[in-house]
Picture 1 (cartoon, rainbow, N blue to C red):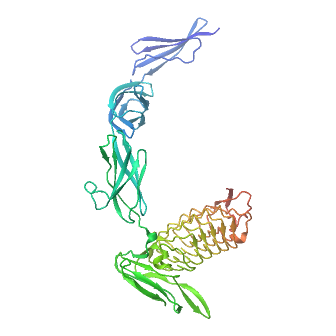
Picture 2 (picture 1 turned 90 degrees about the vertical axis):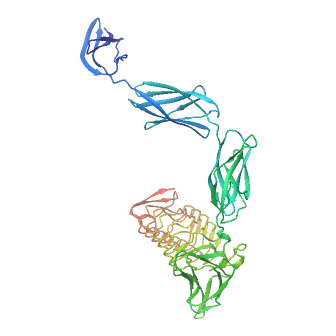
Picture 3 (picture 1 turned 45 degrees about the vertical axis):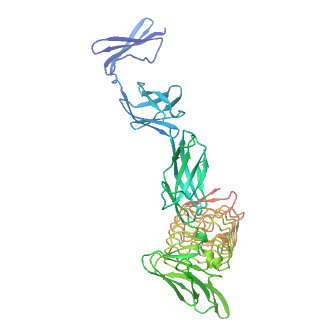
Length: 571
């Protein structure tokens, strides 16, 4: 026979009885309609072939009735949306809360802490709306409230960001115009003008839908004020933004090579050289921005140029390479003149004014050895951030040793114009720049000739990120030898995966003694020649990964290939 009925008999402490039954063989019985926060006794039974059997009696107490109380905190338009924010208290945790605006919109509440935020979209500015909120807790207890609001009409415009160049400023616009418009404009004034009373210098227009408006024809290195204006659809009402300030960039590319005293003391600027220079070179300098020029013949071991007051600058121009010819034993060598100072200095402007004199803006040509060793050993040089070199090719020795031994240098010049590095072009350029933290950006270089970047960043102890050399394909003899050797803080290796040709000793000692390096890339060469990579990863981290081309055989457990303790992975 089969069980025909099961049930539970429920009794309160006061003796009130209720019975919940299910036909058939039910394994679960729901007892609803009980009183919150009440103690009950329950006894289960079943009827089998007309015979009733009962269980033992169990006691339980129902939970207290839950409450949900919502309190409105704020209502505000956010762009084309409308945000309604409530705080709440509830006996039990909430599972959901939904706001409905008739058949117009539905917003799922975002519950965070004791706050619920509803963001309503698709409303019409100026219209009144009634909304309902249904909130449910984890025990399915429900709370319903109703309220109303009017979607505000908004007409606003703001300039929320500026991006300057030397002759323009791009203004980023943020506007909400419910009244409609066709176009607007950004007016501009000098920084000393008052846009509420003074006429603008000029303006640039923008159409409805534009995210930006670029003001052009500005003067480099000049401070301006900007204000956006939109004329509403009625053709007369104007909406103005707040006034924002921005300065155009200084066009260092068009400025003479400049040395600035970065100290608050007098600073003597000089040049160090060698005795017995043949054909001493003539250097012109000015401390009044080119109104008057003085000149000095560079020859001998040291030549004083001028003494700069605190925070003042001196500009230079010169024709020909900045080196001297030194003859000894019947042979002639080209040796550098190097700037010196008694206090900290920065260098800015165009290097080309030390090659083409006053014609440097229109003529960027230069000689081999042009700036060879220009600041070599200048321990007071602290900044080259605004120093400009504008040429695709670095000629032989052109920037060789230019900043070698500048132990106080902390920042970097822009080198992204460079495509080709000729023999010894960037050799030891930043060697022993111990405080340098910004790596050179060489992302556009594709070819490095013999010794082109030989020991270029050797002993740059503060570098953590490698120079960007992602597009180099060809490395000549000794081209990248010792490139990052002894960079003891380096943790990010250079990406050399496009390199397909490596000359003799091309990457010898490449990252030798970079003890924090835990991974590296192998070049995409077809055959691995050990002698070209001798000690290339010597004394790096004890464990690491070498990413290599698929199918390339690289010897293991050797500093000329895969270091001991390292694994390989194809890229």
